[in-house]
Amino acid sequence: MKKILITGAGGGVGQHLRRELAGKYDIRISDIAPVKKNPGESFMKADVASMKDMLRITKGVDAFVHLGGYSVEGPWEDILDANIVGCYNAYEAARRNGVKRFLFATSNHAVGFYRRDEVIDHKIYIKPDSRYGVSKVFGEAMGSLYSDKYGMEVFCMRIGNVGTEPIDKRRLAIWISPRDLAQLVSIGIDSPKVRFEIVYGVSNNKRSWYDNRNAKRLGYKPQDNSERFAKAVLAREQIGDARAEQFQGGAFVKAEQIDNPTPVVQRHARSSK
Image (cartoon, rainbow, N blue to C red; front, side, top):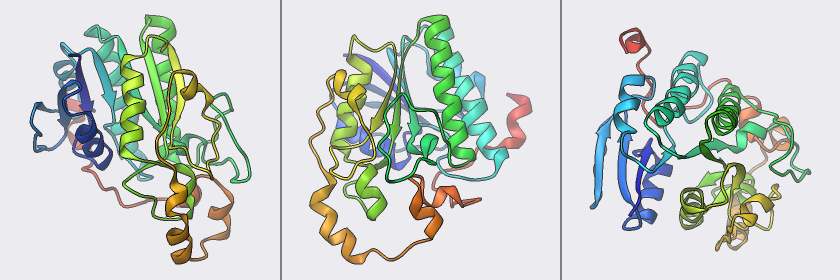
């Protein structure tokens, strides 16, 4: 059984993924705050902004699923620590400890300034919609570097929105069910074809804005489709901001800050780490 590390394990995506992957891998979970373990898991507390912490938690793992970081648009200082410094630390610690397979949770917000009437694939030019989106582009670029320079096998998942069901019209296009996410992550961990890959983390949605042929090339066969929720979602949908409605990134194209559902990295501690 492969040993995998999941950072950001206490967040919503991490909790869905851990539940779906239970029993399939030997799972080490990590977060900046204590997380209640599920059966079969081990926990190691760590701050992604600390190289010392990242070197400690990446020892002895076969694959690293990096979900940790600042998860929305917010102050540059917080995004810098968690998603730029923290992302570098994650890749570099994995390299130093000989972790061959690295799965990076990038985001639809790396390409959020494409219009909703466009269908895009994994080869398009990046168009981030926010500082958060820029940080995800950075993580993809780091993955390309570490794959080419060091031979790391990197699987970048531009995740849409993970949940048991989509909650609004925009998410009808970008939703991914927990079981489809788990299937995609398992491909990222186990497929012998992975070198450096960018795929979209979405279910088989009728309204999708993404040509996900690269994921399908690697064997992805999503089981769910947001369309079964469409009638209920559209019935309660209200007219939104006109500019946000034009673009795939939605509110991120205008927002300067969105409430962060996860703990913020402690910036003042960086100098001692």
